[in-house]
Image 1: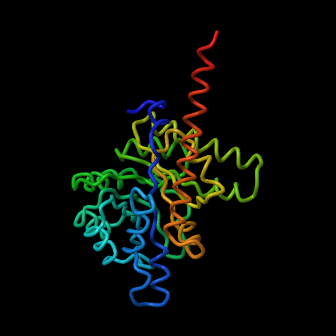
Image 2: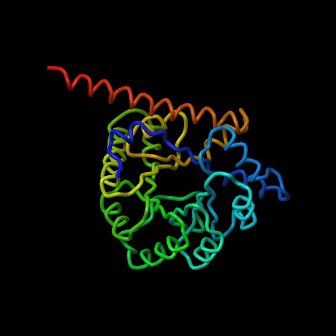
Image 3: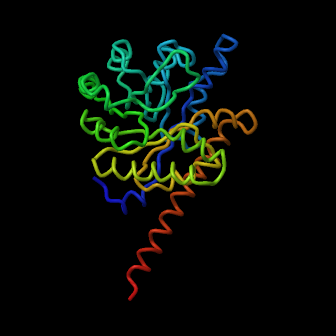
Amino acid sequence: MKSRQSLTGSRIRLGVNIDHIATLRNARGGRRPDPLRAARLAVEAGADNITAHLREDRRHIRDADVEALMASLDVPLNLEMAVTPEMLAIATGLRPHACCLVPERRQELTTEGGLDVAGQTAALQPFIAELQRAGIQVALFIDPDPQQIDAARAVEADAIELHTGTYCEAATAGAGPALHRELARLEEAARLAAASGLEVHAGHGLDLENVGAVAAIAEIVELNIGHFLVAEALFLGLGESVRHMRAAIDGARASLRQSDTAASVGGGRP
């Protein structure tokens, strides 16, 4: 496991979620806008991997989209999916680089809260093991809760993705106790997960105004962002939207390195 110091010096990965490119396509029908073209533009602009959520109702990403991404991308594909036999068969057949297991309800607009790993360890452990036997890295989308982190380790996941939605809602409401509390929860969860040997990712609701504090958490090595980038693309173009986010998270990580270096130098003084 990497030390905190080595994590601080590492470049944080940016995963771009292209679900809402497909949402826009499906609103009208036909082929445009093309999720694969969006994925390629995102990679050219600085994305390290592409995320796509294949929902049971296929409301945005479709099976053909995942197949096209697998056939054409030169970067890893992170397939978000529910814990169902259908999705297990699709994932083990296509073998994406990674799968992130998420809770899913038909009536929700977007994923609401994290997966209850602690409440379904018996079902999750063999499900995860089968994905891993297919060579797929498995992450669990969870709330920043120590019980869920312990459970993620118990079911032998490779990584967790911390649900940042509550933090983002607090940030929108403005500075105050709720914002500090939610950021502290993310920081503590990231430390606990990394100490347990889990790779730490984060995502949900992140934008240019709130991403810096999350990107500055040393243990987090990957951020997955979608809706904001697609929304900004309407005004800036997708490439510029991704480049702005890439610069923001790189700047936050650079500031972290500088603060750690200053602390190290200061701590060495008599």
